[in-house]
Image (cartoon, rainbow, N blue to C red; front, side):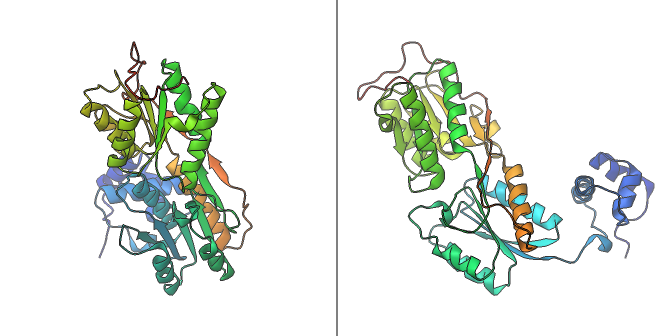
Length: 354
């Protein structure tokens, strides 16, 4: 059965979709060399988009199995990481085995046992127990003692023999605070998740240091730790609003959506009365009401680095154990604006100047 009839019009369609020449499409479909991996991927994506089945010659033999362990998928940033990492593993000939957690469901340790039973060649952990300072790192040390290559994403774990890829949380806080102070805000609060997590601790430490530089004696009064959910963000924002803050930096986009909900429940407008900054730049977050100003995690670059490190480890090529920090990017949209005249100073402990 011919999966892709050689009709000229079809080659043209694929070339137009991929943004390449018909000659390049022909080289890819015939499995010839001399085409970059980026271009090859564009042609394959065009095949998929246009509904063509890939020719058998393009189905290379898998190089091996790789486990990908991520938290629950209700936070859109985790599916984004999963998609990038899975795609890059597949491009390199590996078969990704996605393991997603949920409250009351299969645990990370149970997933690892299942992956070992399948004979995986390596495992990528995204925001797993390695990021939880209350959890033992012995589980990862046991895996390394068995020769299983690991890569950790967003959560450096002291003493674990594995490459680590993280977003620079200190840089993220500096970008967010600088943006809000440039808009005239002097009463800025931070809403984050549980403090036992490494990224949260880093955000708190950086935010606190920024406040101290501005003469704030007790930065902890301007920080609320809650859950990484819409409801958690709403609760934290209500507390910060009631203590007079005119801007809130959140530890995730979901929390930021909760902060917007909190403002509206008090009759405030975003950003006229309260500015809100998220974290992640999750898919579709630009289409919220208002479009969310947020700190973008470089998901694609981080996923590429994680996969490159894991493949190198699998091939016994030495990889640095120094944590690889990626610079985030402030994306300014409609949820931040000039500080309100007269600043929403409400009853309760006054918000210190930032």
